[in-house]
Length: 138
Image (cartoon, rainbow, N blue to C red; front, side, top):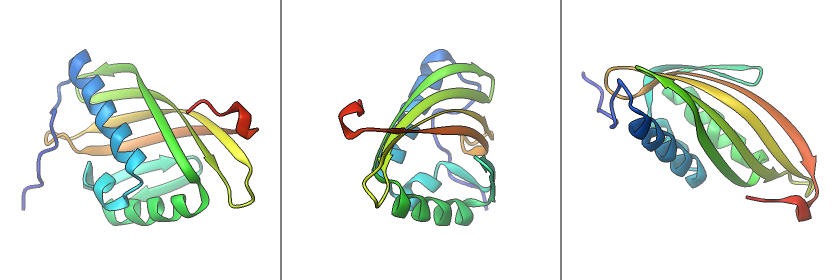
């Protein structure tokens, strides 16, 4: 069975890379694991911090768990670089934990897409910084 296409398709131009990033930002800000996972191939491979996640079903479980711990999550992504079927992204997001402590997370992601525009690889390096609620900017 052929997977659905997720436009725009590679090879990316600056405009289509930015479009792909905005679509990802919008999806992640929805905090809907099913919706988000549809941008990834069935056999997607992730490294997220120190976790290795394989497959769309595992992505859904990971994301569902993420938002039980990262409350009031808000994300901003921006283009760093692109080439053919790859995009590099800088990002920051803010969230609070259940104890009320706010954090800003900074990081980089490297994305690789298949011919259908589905992300087949996502490698994320992320650092968290504790902040005061008054320091929030997102």
